[in-house]
Amino acid sequence: MFVPDQYREPEATWMAELVRENPLAQLSSNGDDGAAPYATHVPVILDPQLRDLPSDLPGITLWGHMNRANPQWAALASPTPVVVAFSGPHSYVSPTVYGITPAAPTWNFTAVHVRGLLSRVDSEDDTLETVKATVRALEGRFGAGWDMSDSVDYFRRILPGVGAFRIAVSQADGMFKLSQEQESGTRERVRCSFAGETSRNQREIAAMMGRLPSVPASVPSPGQP
Image 1: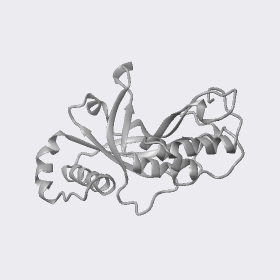
Image 2 (image 1 turned 180 degrees about the vertical axis):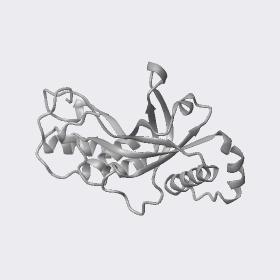
Image 3 (image 1 turned 120 degrees about the horizontal axis):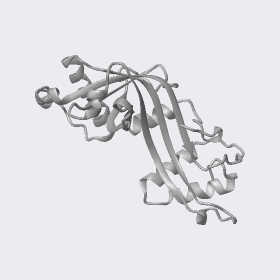
């Protein structure tokens, strides 16, 4: 992923935080014999054995699973190079917010692209643990405290259709485009405008903008208005 310097990760754990908070990722891998690449949206979580958010994603392991009936699963050998794309909050930015002329519209967004080697999980016990770890991670952050205890036998019955995997991360790029190319006053008008909107995406963008260090605006890179 092309990331201009002014849009890189502002703090050490921002990429890991985005991965944790946006676990529905796009898993991409090469197609067979020159065919189009595969891409599937799947739940992917940070290694559940990690106690704290890592300051660097390379070197860690991601856990995930997909439907074994998916043709992508059959094409995934062990190991297979993959790209996993996580999308965070994003929103269109109208020039009406800037209060200056001339101006151009843009899109503020956050994303992390991870590269690594995917290995399939062959053990039934490890596949079940992948499903349980995913439930714990997602129910804990996004659910209502559901207890899976009475459903573990059901999990076992559906395991033949579950393809679990691990991804050893070798590279990670984060794009946090939060109006850093604008001077501080304009940036603050964007933040305040988004903070007052009903859209969750815009409010989350505003919160992230509020965490940015106070730095002078950068000159936009070509293709990044």
